[in-house]
Length: 281
Image (cartoon, rainbow, N blue to C red; front, side):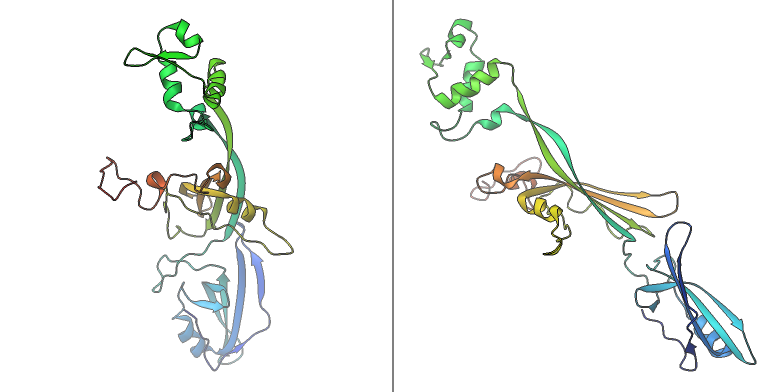
């Protein structure tokens, strides 16, 4: 909450700004007035008090000057502490850093299979061919069906994928973007482990027309899964909260939603999966 100096006190001009050894910004505010009035006001100071716009109480010094006057100097920090104050405030980050990196993901070649027999490789045919024990049949792209008849694979898309499998290709390397956000706090962050394992869009800075954000462009082109939300206490008594999201290009899915909502959505399947007639896809 805002703290008000006594009406009998006058704000002084000899104020200063600086930084502590740990890098925290500081700001001092000074008031001159009757010593007793300043003393009474100083006794009410609390760590949650906003002394100046964006500056919160950290400590103070009160000293006598001429006659009955005094000077109250209040030392402020950018962010309030919630430890011990009567009116704790939600902690705000001292620093907010964003990174865009990549991570390798090996995708099974079976991901090339699809529903269209004419346009897509057919997984059922490929797996039946791979299980064929007769090498002569398999080398001719044939397999024996349960009824004893011989099926010859002639579908071009399926044959194209089989050719890769015959070369020993089992997976395809893909590189997915990872967006990481690291916020530094003067105290324990107010939240952590939010939306882990769920489809979630990173709240990346949008940028401006003059200075567009490449990060925002990357975020818009992908669908994201939140994969990290950690808190760590540093040696200087500050805390960091590190969040990360893995993205898959929306173009990798015809509907623009490559992360399966049944597995990663807000209403994802429970474990074990329980089928509800008419309620599950």
